[in-house]
Length: 121
Image (cartoon, rainbow, N blue to C red; front, top):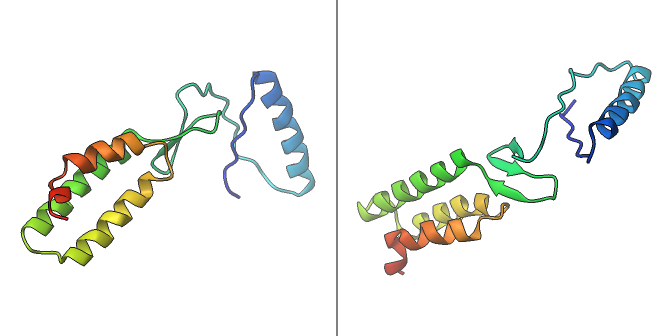
């Protein structure tokens, strides 16, 4: 079974929800992993993003570093003539697509504007 995430304003509300879920799982003869109750002010890391209870989704630190490095590597490969313009654009679009799911417009613009490729097109 996949992981489940519940947000609540109080620990008691989460514990009550957990009891109900445990009861339902027992009726289905399923076993839950041990529950983890944590504060969420720093968000929850999920697949390169950081998710917050107010439905904000931001890029994680590692994802930001990876985006910067991959953009730089892509620019260098294009400058060295290893990529065609079409291939370069498709790969760059793929890189930026990942960032569009997060609130990362300013970060994305900063990285892409600092990149030399905008002067070329």
